Image 1 (tube, rainbow, N blue to C red):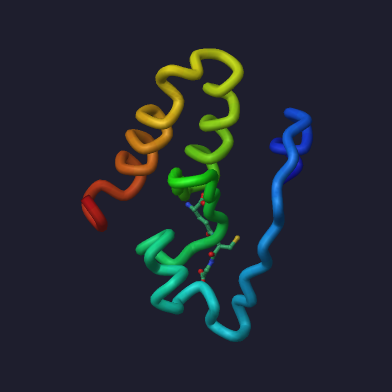
Image 2: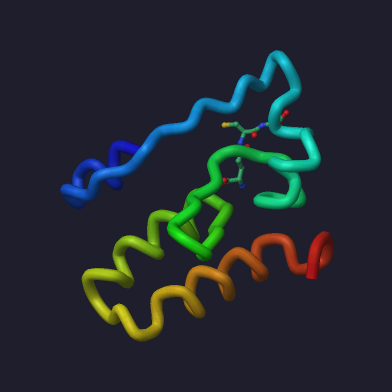
Length: 84
Ligand SMILES: N[C@@H](CCC(=O)N[C@@H](CS)C(=O)NCC(=O)O)C(=O)O
């Protein structure tokens, strides 16, 4: 979140109450099948894994045509054996 603010981007923060198990609801698992926070939802784009989320913003500045593919690629690399 600090990095996103640092890029001067606005966003809506949606809290996920870990104590209440909100990260394991079917709705949340649709966003991130691993049930971890954070998740970035940008229109139809969903990216999880902190590094992939951060790089998604960096790529937006550096090479926007590649940014989504790049983020999804790195999300997959982190957990290739679990969800892909
Ligand atoms: N590799 C993930 C790790 C995310 C992570 O560990 N998130 C923690 C909160 S900071 C979490 O969701 N923990 C749930 C749990 O372990 O029960 C990332 O970088 O986004």
